[in-house]
Image (cartoon, rainbow, N blue to C red):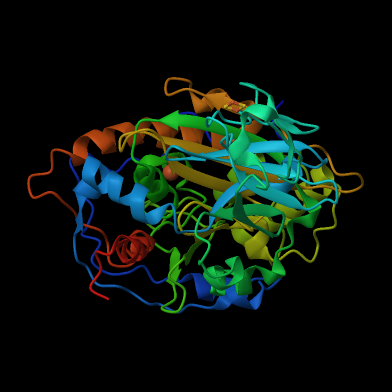
Amino acid sequence: MEQEGLMRSAPATGGYDLPDPLTLPEEGVRPPIVVNEILRKDAVPPPANLLEDPHNTLGTDPIPASRYFSEEFFELERAKLWPKVWQFACWGQDIPNPGDTHVYRIMKRSVLIIRQRDGSVKAFVNACLHRGAELCETHTHKAELKCPYHYFTWGLDGDLKWVPSKWDFPQLNGRKFNLPEVRLEEWNGFLFINFDKDAPSLETYMGRFAEHWKVWDFSKRYKAVHVQKRIQCNWKNGLDAFIEGFHAFASHGQGASVVPDDCSQVDIYPDSPHMSRFQIPMGYPSPRIHPAPPPEETFEMLCAGFLPEALGTEEGRIKPGEDSRAASARIARLSYEKNFGISADKLSTAEALDAISYFLFPNFMPWPCLSFPLVYRFRPAESPDWCIWDTMLFLPFSGERPPSAETIELGPDDPLEDIAALGGLALVLHQDAMQLPSVQRGQQNLVDGNLMLTEYQELRIRHYHKTLEHYLGLGKD
Ligand code: FES
Ligand SMILES: [Fe+2]
């Protein structure tokens, strides 16, 4: 079923292609609109953290493209990155009852996450201590952890309960033989694991990320959509496409009348190597469109996305004193009240309308805004050329918590644009999915072997590469 209250109106074709051949002037000067100025004028102001504009940059050094396709680099990541970092494994409400399991796989490792009888959650290395069979292969429910191969059995808490032909294992006499645990911590309903017993706590690892997110509580959100897709690109190419807005005009031109691209804000902090964010304001057109579309066009496109039934009514027009952004935020709030049954009048314009993306290195990308209630995750699959891409939508609810949505699994050739539950996002994600395998192929042909990033708009990519270098022992720090 198509998801109510999400952006639904993106046209399937069209957009604002630049003239070919190009006749526009060089874009040598940063456009005058800055996010902070927009947010400060909003009728309902944002939380203070969204007004921070640290404007840190990290230079313009090239990034070696081989990091995205070399087997050696992939092995380095396997050995030195993934065993050391906190990684998003599971939404806690996916396993609400004692005995509910989730299996999280990362680069040949497998972790069994299981809800305990007291409501807490434990994570175990997902391998039987007899001859190593996986104790659980999928999301399911278990009364105990019985290995299917010879029936060695452990309790939900990992304590050994039964040994087949115990007389034949004299070496077990007096040994506990419990399942080895993997570190697990919960944050805002999300479960994170870390293989490193000496790693700092999740909160310390998060740094400023945890500080910023104190104002965003997911206890009243539920996982309404989960789409998982195998895609032929390095996990970092997937990640890169979702932590910059620079590609929006070219790749998602259908949104150019509602997104002032070139004006996004990109934030990193020197004291938080694992966190970055962008803010892309909505409700004004791209400065690249000449002549600029009238405010009504911008508003009506957003209105058609949030609350199409309002078009042609009093609510579906820009009111005196409003501009296209203010009117769009009003309609967005109305749609949340109608579709989610929540009170949204105090929701800031930015949280109601904008694209706000946070990243916790290496695999957690939650968006706190209601306009794009997204959580993304990219993980490496079996080789540098393949990854697993999760897209989740977390919607507010009133009354009883709805159950988490079942995961829709898509193969490399299954189109995302057919997933009605994603609303208007389906086309946007489809456009990204079509692009990424070609990026993966093309990078291997670069003559000088380097990627040349923007200094500011692609800063988040450069930032996590520095963090990656640190884990892999490549940095100059
Ligand atoms: S491998 Fe698990 S019981 Fe034998
Ligand atoms: Fe995109």
